[in-house]
Structure formats: C-alpha cells, structure tokens
Length: 412
Ligand SMILES: *Cc1c(COP(=O)(O)O)cnc(C)c1O
Image 1 (cartoon, rainbow, N blue to C red):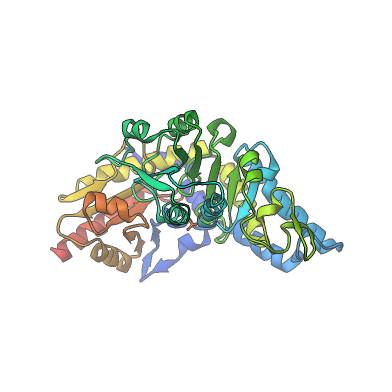
Image 2: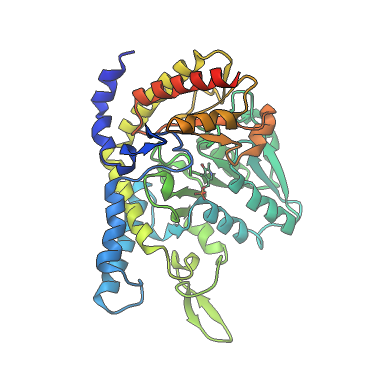
C-alpha cells in the first residue's frame, strides 16, 4: 500500500497543525497520541472559543436584561441549534445539554424510576461501557425490574438471534452503544431499535464512541434516546447532549430541581419549565456548550465521509502491521468496526506494554476500558488499546509497531 499518497490526499499534515498539542514531545519523543477513544485532542478554534467567551462576553444566560447576558444566551442557544442540525434532530426542545454521556444516561435511568414496575425487563448489551450498565442496575434495584444481557460472540458482535428470544412484551427498555469503546464494533442499532419498537420497548443508544467517527441522522435512526460527549468529538470536557423524543421527555420527571428548570415557584407548589429547560437545572456549562458547537463546525468542515474513509485506511493498515507481530492477538474482529484496536501479546501484561510505549512518547490505553464484562468474556485482565483519530498518520502506526516490537523483546 502506498501510504504516502493516501495521507497526502487527505492532507493530514495540514489538519495536524490545527492541534497545538500534537507538536509537543513526551519523554523526549514526539507525542504519538493513540488514546482517542478515551478523549480526543482539541483544535485551536475550540480553545479560542473558550478564551473568547471568558475574555469578551462572560455572563449568566437566560435571565439578564443586559447586553453581555444577551450575547452569551444567543451564543449558547446557537450552539444548541448547531447540535440539532448536526444530528438532524426534529425539534430544538429535544436537545438537552448535559455534562456528558454518563450524566445523560443517569438522567434517563432516574426518570424511569416512577415508570417501571416490578417484573418489567430491561435489556443491556454485553458490549456496554460501565456508564451504560450501572445506572440501570441501580434502577432495577429500586424498582424490581430485571436486567437481561444481550450476549456477544468471539468477534465482539452482538447475537441478534438471542436478542429476538430476549424480547417480549415485558421488555420496557433496551440500551446499546452505537460503537463499542473497548473493541470498536459498530453495532446494528437500526435493527435493534426496530425490533424493540415491535414489542413496545424504548431504546437508548449510547453514542459516546460513535459520534467522532460518524454523523448519525437521528430522525432516520428513530432511537428514543441518544447520547454523546463533546470531549470525544474535539470539544471540551464537561458537556454533552441527551437527545430524547419529545413524547418521552415530556413524560419523564425533572432530574434535578433548582433555578432555570422552573416556571413558577411558591412554597405550596412549583411548576416546571418547558423543554429543554426542564432538564437543565442551574447555571449550565455555558463556555463549553458554545465550544461544542465550534467543534461540530470544525468536524463538519473536514467532513464525516472524509474522516471515516481516512480512519478506515488507518484501521486496515494498523491491523495488518500489528498482526505481523508474533503472539499478538486482536480482540474485536468484526467486519463492522471503527478505528479502535484492542490487543494483547502472549504472556505479557497489557500494563507493562503501555508503560514502555509511554516512555517512547506513545499514548495508548491499558486495562478494562470501563467495560469489565467484555474482559471477563475473553477471560483476560485487560487489553492494550490503540484508538486512531483523523489526525493520526500512517507513520505513527509504524512508530507504534516498532515500539511494540521493542517492548516485546524487553518483556520476554
Ligand atoms: C466514553 C464513553 C462513555 C462515557 O462518556 P463520559 O464522557 O465519560 O460520560 C460511555 N460510553 C461509551 C461507549 C464511551 O466510549
């Protein structure tokens, strides 16, 4: 494969200049950042948006009559509108700002406390991040609902035959990630949603790992809830969204009480604000919300088709090169996967490999990746995970492969 012509066609070198952190050194070596599934790096435009807000129009929103407050409110609501358009969400009031995916899932799980009854069934997939498992376990403990597990196979794919068997008119909710952060599997969520709806169950899709790689069309997808975190999409930490169908959001009670989420408060009775504010108690994360909108603009300028195409080439190249290393095993081998590679080398603990790679300036993740059930499935303590973004290069993959070979020699 002629890697040079491909990387030049995408102009990754030009893109890399947008990310100041990518030119730093770590432990004396040029940084090779391959922990994008944990969080992405930030382009200068996003960093500038944060500085601009705090330097020029910092004010609390939605309540002030003064000009700064108006400017801040406009910018924040414009960001909500950008998010709505990006995901092709029908109504602006279906876009709830949250602190991120974890917060969004807890909000929904909490909302179902009064809706579920003893004996109701919920289906969780075997590929989930802990943030899409634990809130539901807490909900089941409180309500007496039962959590059923949709199993996976050796390739890291969900078993859709078993899914059909699990579904019944007792099923009230199904929750699955769009893309697995631990293995990279892209799940067949269209089919999962359609089958759940046939038995009257609602579906929450955890899009935290997907939204940096693909651009979901939420009206076509027809999920009842969809979540993501800005920090995995070149945006800041501490902000994300919950999309919910208006019917569901109207039905769920508020998650937190406070300012911003009320219509009228007396000591006898409080009435709640309209959507989306009903779920946005307190002063929101204004600067980061605005910068999230800027991150979406940035990603859309590059274009999600170009991103997916380039990342697929990186995935293919890295898979091929890594498999040339004797004793290396990749976990998650679905034909439908994104640029995440989880692997181990025979008889070597993932942590030891990660430590040596770090000494050489290479950032990878080691451990269970907040998905312990997947590690239990494979009967391993964890993996080394290299996850690629559109600003990574073929050269960085070569550097990774050479470093792993070196680590292997040192550790055996
Ligand atoms: C990162 C991630 C989460 C958690 O997101 P937070 O931003 O930490 O709330 C949940 N699910 C998946 C699939 C993820 O990749």
